[in-house]
Image (cartoon, rainbow over all chains, first blue to last red; front, top):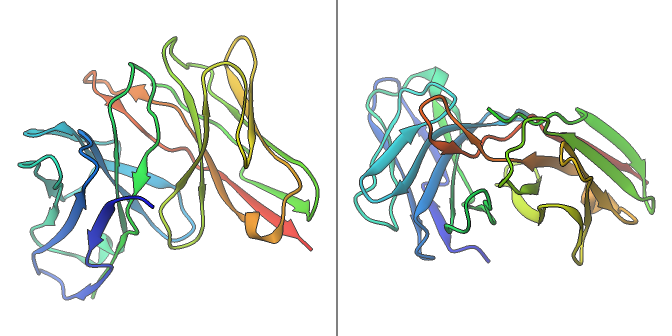
Length: 116
Length: 113
């Protein structure tokens, strides 16, 4: 059982609202990731972090932002939600192993966001 | 930037062995290959990881040839519950030099009764 948690699981909001998707892990992992996935489609990496105060943008351009103030916490924020942000957002973490050895990515259950 | 390529979909009857091949021509010397399974509305779940030759665990085997430019996930005697999307994952460096974990399009496996 993975110790990585996402809240909320489901969220329906109106256009222009600010939202924060929470992700927390209790495994002490330095590396954390946010993926965006539409139904039936592939996962797109939108943000990742190597540790506290480290954040990077992924392959898919995203209007969201992230922060990493504590090792266990990696929230994702949308300042002004739009219908195009409707999607599932998956958070993941992994330990640091040898260079190139990615080990196991542990995923949360996801946050499904609907913007009206 | 290492990129993975897999068949978009596969069908198999229950009880058969299924082999899904992934190509990763630009894999770096140090990189491992990892496979994940994903059911609808869930996050991917780790299946197996390997660096070279053959790795086996309780659910699958992973075959990696000497040149490591491809890998094959083997699922023995599949059941209906194995219907899912399967991804192979290889890390890669972005243009800025950061090590990323970027998933490919995956293979949708449908198991038929």
